[in-house]
Amino acid sequence: MSLTDAELERYARHIVLREIGGGGQMRLKAARVLVIGAGGIGSPAIEYLAAAGIGTLGVVDDDTVSLSNLQRQTLYATADVGQPKAQAARSRVAALNPEIAFTGFEQRIDADNAAALIDDFRPHVILDGCDNFATRLAVADATLRHRVPLVSAAVSEFEGQLGVFRGWEAGKPCYRCFVGHDPERPGISCAEQGVLGALTGVMGSLAALEALRAIVPFGEDPAGKLLLVDALAFRFRTLTLPKDPGCPACGT
Ligand SMILES: [Zn+2]
Image (cartoon, rainbow, N blue to C red; front, top):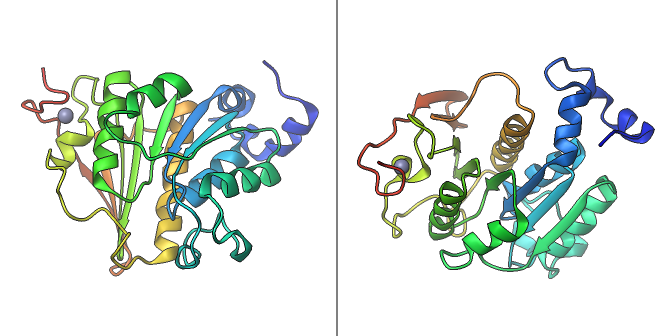
């Protein structure tokens, strides 16, 4: 695999970075990233991944664009209201970067089909920005079993969370080590509660950054840490996430 003259120009600001370079850019071109949820977090994540030259992008979303989405879901314009998000996302990605191979999945992921979707798409990284906890657990369990790094971002009102999970590794927690096992757990959904639109943009952009880091890679390994963003207090914090030795998902 090599980069064309147009790609060398398009990605010049990546390629001049010592930590990425031509080799890193070619890894991005060869990479397959699956994004769960094309909403407030998925919007900037999909845009930055496409702009960054991720060669193959998959987007899973069974929803259609509604007027109340446009306060934060910057992938869509007013004329897209009523369109399936996966289709509108395809148009946006094609306009932004026609080099990207795009697959839209107009379906909802659950515990029954998550493994098959991963087997089918074979992602190097999964970025989860979906709006419900049951889907998050199904995605997290499937990524653990398939040993696919999981970048998980969530926003609630004025708070954001970001974590990278590789729970099959010694000392690294899985998503269930972090959140527990109750599928009825409240929160981590902006479906009914309020959410600051610009904060979903921050967390989606950070999630894209971590997906890129997982592929190139560069800098420190974020797995085993949790980034918390408090937009009311103008504060970012990083916590260490311990691996739960009794975790039924990743424990020995
Ligand atoms: Zn675990």
